[in-house]
Image (cartoon, rainbow, N blue to C red):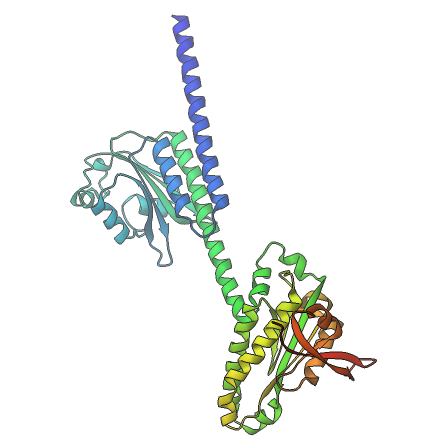
Length: 409
C-alpha cells in the first residue's frame, strides 16, 4: 500500500515538473518571437493564443485590441473555426460597457472567470446561438492586457464544458497577456519610429534621418572626424532674377530646382546638409561610409549639370538668365550635431567645406571646379582641365583648380 502511494506521489511530481517545463518553454518561445519582431505583431499574437489554448486545455482563444475608436477589435484567434462567428466577431468590436467577457475585463481591469455561461444572466448566449455557436454551457476566462495601468486588450479563453480554470492556468494566461501587451507596445513603437523617420526625411537627408533613429546615432551625432567629398552648387544670375520677378515665380523655380536636384542627390548616395536659397551643400562618405566617394560626388555633379540643362530652357524662354555652377573638394572634416536645444543641424565643418564653397563661387555656368586633391582622386575616370591657380576668398595663397569636362570612356 505504501509503495503504491509513493509511486502515485512520484508520478504526480514528474507530471507537474514536465508540465512546468512545457509552460516555461512556451513562455520562452513567445519572448524569442517578440525579440525578432519589428512591425508585424500578428505571428506573436497567434503563437500566444495557440500556447494559451493548448496549455489550458481550452477549446478556443481570442484576442481583442483596443484601438483609436476606444472599442476592442477582434485581431487574433486560435481554435474552433466557425466562419459565421469569426466574421461576426471581426465586424462587431466590443465596447467597455458590453456584458460579455471583454467588457467585464475592461471595466474590472483584472482577470474575470465566468463559471457557466449558460447560467450567467448577463452573458449574451443568445447571440452566439444565432451564429451557429452551440454553447449551452461552458467556462470563459478573460485576462486584460495592461500597459501603464490601462487596458489595451483582452485575451479570452473558452472551454465548451463547464470546468473552472485553476489558479496556475489563470496565472499562465496572465503571463501570456503581459507578453502580448509587450508585443503590441513594441509594434506601436516601431511604427512610431518609422513614421518619425518618414517625417524627418522630409526635412533632413535620408541618411541623417536614419542616423538619428539608429543605435549608433548618438555617438556619431556627438562628433567624429572622417574624410569626405563636399560639393557646393548654386545659381548663376539668381540675384538679378529674384529682383526682377514676383516672389511666387522665384519660389516656383526654386521648387523645381530643389525637387530635381534632391532626387539626384539621393540617387547618388549624397547627404544634403542644407538648402540655402539657390545654393546647396552635399557631402559623401558620411554618415554612411561608401567606397569611391570622390567618384560618386563627381558623377552626381555631372548628372545635376546635365539635368539642369534639360529643365532650364522654359526659364530662358521667359527671359530668366539662370545657370548652375559647382565646386567640389576632398579632405577631412569634423561631422556631427551643431546648434542648440530645440534646433539642431547635422553638419560637416573644416577647410574642405570652405574650399568647395569658394570653388563654387568662382565656377561659371555649367562648370564643375574641383580641388587638386579631388582631381588626383578621380584621375583616370574623368577628363579634367587645369584652370590655373585661383585667388579664393579666405585662402592665404592661390589655389590650383581643375574643371571637370566629362567621364572617360
